[in-house]
Amino acid sequence: MLSGGKGERIGGKKPFRIFNGKYLINYPSDILKSLNIPYVTVFAKNSIDLDKEKEYLNKYNCIISFDLIENKGPLMGILCGMRVLNAEWFIVLPCDCPYITKESIIKLISYIKISKKDNLCIVPKHENGFIEPLFALYRRSSLHLLNKILMEDNNLSLRYFISYLNPFYIKAENLDRSKKIFKNINTIQELKYE
Image 1 (cartoon, rainbow, N blue to C red):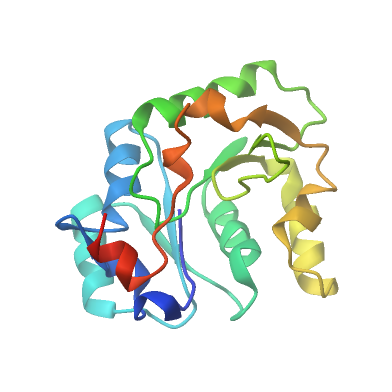
Image 2: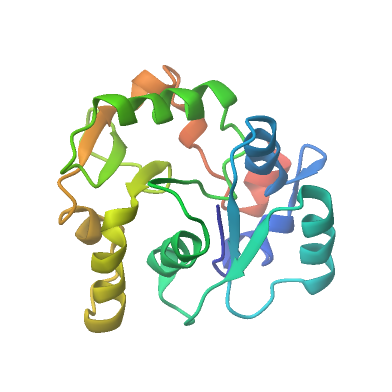
């Protein structure tokens, strides 16, 4: 799970902003824990809030990692998460999507069975062509390419990375007809008025 980013529009410390009585980061964490899926939470290189991170670690007893290099965006977070866990597939989730459901994660994971060996990622795609690279699955064999892009390339776009992975696109509405699961909280107003 990615928990980095400056969160400037939300007043900073995005994972630990309270939404409907819970930290934003607790929503996806509670679901992953209930599904008994081993996961890593990746924070920004410099601690967001050491006390809250310790509290989070004590509550969830998950692995915590930190970005190796600052200002490399979500690609760095994905790399740091993949380096820690030993798995064939990795689900990437953002910390700021409180509407993620257990059912949507189970459905996403179910597409692994019908993906092909050369599909290195499984990504939801909307009718308008917009993709959801932060609610997606990435195969371990994409790690070497991810590392290469981070170390040698100036383009840190998730879409750029995905373009090399022979993506298996699935319809976003297949995970949730309302598509509410993809809504993230970015501003103080969204924190207050949901």
